[in-house]
Structures are given as C-alpha cells and as structure tokens.
Image (tube, rainbow, N blue to C red; front, side, top):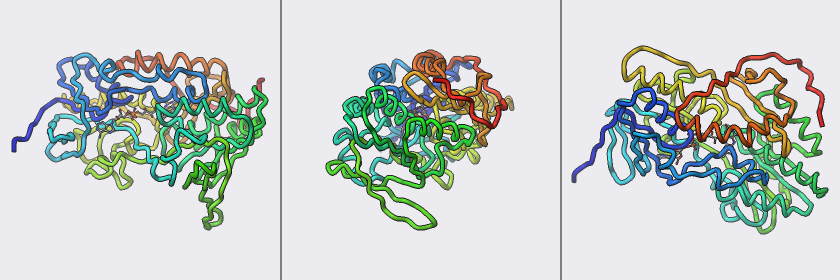
Length: 417
Ligand code: FAD
C-alpha cells in the first residue's frame, strides 16, 4: 500500500475564526511560506451573529460564506477532517489516509458540541418549542418560537463551563424578554445554570442580575439540564444543594438549550491534549508546552480565557508572530493577556459590552462604565463587528482597537431608560 505524504511549512487544522485568521496573518507576514488549511466544512460561519438571528435582529444568510471564498490568497485548502496527530514525527493524518508533514502546526479546531449528553434533546430540537442558537439551522427557529410565543413559560439553559461565548445562553433570554414585554405577552421567564451567578466576572455579574430583575426573570443557580421530553414539554434538571443531588421537572412552552461542550475528540485522544482534553498550550505564548513547533488558537486550547471570537482576534498576532519566530529562529515573542469580550444584548437596541482579561481584570476599550447598556455597543455588535470579522480579522489585517485596565466605582451606574 502506498502512503501519500504532503509537506508544508505550516499546517493549520481548522478553517474557522482562528484557523482562517492565523493563516491569513502568516501569509501577510511572509509570502514565501507554504501554508495549508485543513477544513472539512464547505462553509465558514460568523457564529456571534446567531444570537441576533435568534432574537429576530439579523438575517441568518449573512452569517455564512463558502469556506473557499474566505481562504487567504496563496494558501491551500485541504477539504478533509484531521483524525490523528503524530507530533514526534511532525505529521498528522487526514480521514482517507493522507499524511501531512509540517515545520509548524497550528491547531484551531474549535469546540465540540455534545448534544447527546442531554437525554431526548436531539429528537426534539427544532420542534415542540425546543431550540438552540448554537446551530446555524436552528437559530431561525429560536426567533419563530419567540415570535409565536403567546404566553406561558420560557426556559433558557446554560451548561457547565467551559463553553464558547459564556454570555450567549442569557443574551437570548434578554432579547426574548424584551420582545415579550414590547408585545405585552405574559411570560414566566427562567434561566437555569449549574453556576452560582449570572457571569464568571463578578463586576459584570451584579449588573446582569439587575437586568434579570428588570425583566422580572428568575435565575435558578445550581441547575443542570439532563433530559428533555419535547412532546410532553418537560425539562429535567439535576439540582445540587448541600452536596445532595435531586431531579426537578419544569414544564415549558419554549425552551432554549445551550449544549454541554468539550474538546474535540481527535484532540482529546491525542498526545497534544492536557488531562482535560484541551490542546495543552502556554496561556501567554499559545505555544504547546511539550512540542515547540505546535501552536494553538481559539476554543480548542487549554487557555483559561473566555472562549470567544474576540479572544481569537487578539490571539492571532501572538500565534502568527511566535510561529514565524520559531520558523526563522529569531527568538521574538509576543504574549496574549487573556482578553475576551462578550457583547451582552440586554434588549433589542442596547448592549452591555463586557471586556476582560485573565483573572477577570476589567479592560474596556472605551472609557465609559461598561456595565451600562448602550445603543452605541448595539451598533458595534450588529453592524461593526461583522464588518470587522469578514474584512479585517479573517483577512489577517490589523485593527488598532486597544483595551486597557480601568477602575470603576463599586456601585452600579444608574439605569438609563
Ligand atoms: P470555530 O470558529 O468554531 O472553527 C473551528 C473549525 O475547525 C470549524 O470550521 C470546524 O469545521 C473545524 N474542525 C473541527 N474538527 C476538525 C477536524 N477534525 N479537522 C479539521 N478541521 C476541523 N464570540 C464573540 O467574540 N462574541 C460573541 O458575541 C459570540 N457569540 C456567540 C454566539 C453563539 C451562539 C456561538 C455559537 C458562538 C459565539 N461566539 C462569540 C464564539 C465564537 O464564535 C467562537 O469562540 C469562535 O468561532 C472560535 O473560533 P475557533 O476558530 O476556535 O472555532
């Protein structure tokens, strides 16, 4: 049997937000580099807008482009799925058996959505009022559920961390509650999370608890969705209190589910994984801790930042600079500070722009108190950020937006109608 082997300077695994952007950046930095992006999907998605789609504020068709049209000039697209790594031999294997060897590897394979972890969910998704903004085909159904809601109970669930865009489970709750209020529909809106608060960064958590109050929505902490019976319209939660677990059953008229998430299986089962299955990289240099010519970017890595496209945007120059320095042996090094941002759509027309770095340090790009929802941030979310993504980030270009540590009073800013 002949084994086909192809060689590149840089092989990028995954052509999503991180993979496409880093390939484009590297190509801009050195046009002589032979780069391949291995990506199984025919389409590239702008996932951050799926919240807006679910809230009836964005056209789903604008969130998807053909992968080929997103590919940087001079970079080769390999339409395939990586199934195994052989880092000791600087190579990897794609489904079908082709081996790729590299001088530098960048892993950008995203996060795996584990729909099956919730019993009965897959069978009822997309019908019986059960939906999720975490799939391209389902985000429009979220809006159908909200628009046709004629009163009753609307439940929104969040799985255990880590997940991509930790704010997304509650963003859609606010858009739904805002719509119900405008339409004067009587709704019992509830948020279920295994966590102890509305958000991982306490500075923003308090402000979000107030948003929940304003909508008269109920937050149920310590609750994990384990089963859905779509036809009976029942959701089953495992509740943990004082070290004891019990099952609580909730009736619903609509249910928005965010699935549990984990590192992709082919990374989890490889020599590149840490003990939890994530790509084991240094949280500042994004370089693998054991294999010096391997880098990671985005949701598949072990870095303890919030998994967002905003984080990816800030990781791109770090990965590209450090990878090129490794290839050219210049010793140059750039560091990632853990920056992430989460535009929380507190209503249709206003966003609370949560920006922070490692350890929850609050680092807004603008001097104003970020806990106050603003129309300007809505414009950023709905208009500017999609433009930035398609034309700057995945094109490997640089946009000089700088975040920095800023101090704000402990007290929440007053509510502005
Ligand atoms: P992805 O963009 O998911 O790309 C991973 C790629 O790897 C995919 O194309 C996949 O096909 C490919 N791949 C998988 N397995 C293999 C394999 N075996 N071989 C080769 N390729 C493979 N971020 C924000 O910044 N702001 C937001 O407001 C925001 N909101 C969000 C709302 C929702 C509903 C969702 C779902 C996400 C949101 N995000 C948001 C998160 C953001 O979209 C992700 O963090 C970002 O896309 C991560 O980029 P990535 O490259 O790591 O993964």
